[in-house]
Image (cartoon, rainbow, N blue to C red; front, side, top):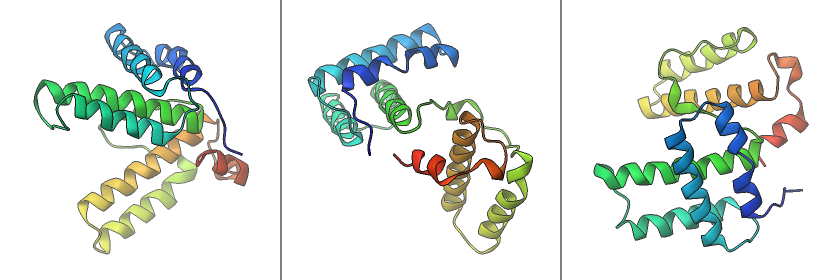
Length: 167
């Protein structure tokens, strides 16, 4: 069964996690602002990812449409990150800081051989650069999820755990 929670309650839950991830006070202020606007937009209904998407579309329209440069794009980035963080917290019970690390990924040893083998196969058999990067990002997200659940080996992966990653 899918978890049901009011938007207002969901917006209050991840603050401690953001603090633990050492988000700056400026970032915390921006997240609080977006969460407050999202709560007002949804008028205390149950959370769903479609509500988050609707809110972003509404907000971007208010800002003059989605843009990719200038001051508006920075605002949109904060709105997008905050709503994405809520979705991650709702789905996984944790938050990820994907944008912190841009270097080489060192895979946990139990996952290294299969991960590197899969990525090598993708590269050798003609997948696009975009597809390769997307596969890497998906695998990285899975590894982050498993790590947040305390799973550091293949034997800890269960159907119940994996179903948690999709709801």
